[in-house]
Amino acid sequence: MTGQFNTFSQASTAPLHSKPDPKLQTRQSVPATNPAGLDPIEASKQLAAYAAVDQHILPHHRVIGIGSGSTVPYVVERIVQQGHETNESRWFIPTGFQSKELIVKAGLNLGDVDQFPRLDITLDGADEVLAEAADKFILVADARKDSALLGTNWRAGVPIEVVPFAWAKVMSNIQLMGCPHPTLRMGKSKAGPVVTDNGNFVIDAPFDEIYMRDPSELSYRLKMLTGVLEVGLFCGMAQEAYFGNSDGTVTIRSKNGKTRMMSVEEGKTKIQSNGHHPSSKPPSH
Image 1 (cartoon, rainbow, N blue to C red):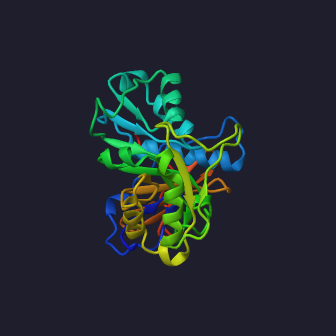
Image 2: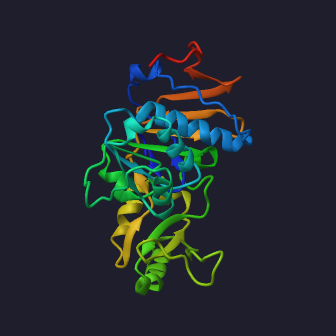
């Protein structure tokens, strides 16, 4: 929908027709190098995560949500690099087991939503509770999740969390809504369905383009089904999205419609904004 980021396992980046924020034209991140010799995709994920942390995890932030996915280890890595003195007074709220383990292993303070009902910011939030609880929500992903319309690149469908006893009825109702082939997500390393951290099942429901053009309406209708707990559609929540590209660049899309490109040349971060190329020299801190 125009004027929003709409996401599930990918982000919608359709043109957004609102006035750009002039402050976004000059912001630059601390340069991220690739000393570990990562492959191009991993290096771009690292750059996207580093840039998002540099620009959005600020010293005054005290309660920070950490999402899940392949970019999150780099998010935590960059936060740790901000220093012990900065992080010792912060609390980090995970969305699930993966992010909890990363927080604990990094020696950061682990909190939960019962302690902190409001978060200053969430990065890579894949959990709607944290996305809605955060004052600012920033997406970090790879380019495979960047598309003009939801469902274009990610074809597995909308993830829907359901209570175990109702999954068959929910599947039937989803088919009546216009999804011909919903599937119960099955485990890869063990027999049986995938079980979420809360003990529920997940249905993947690929809808045709006509339904995906209005994800807010689709999300509302799915949530009205008996047995549905959550729907993996996040409409209009993200302020910015950082997408790592296979060529080592990062695409930064803002909710106000502005798009920027970030590239790494000989270890130096360079921002390209609307065809202009500001100095690659990073700002002093």
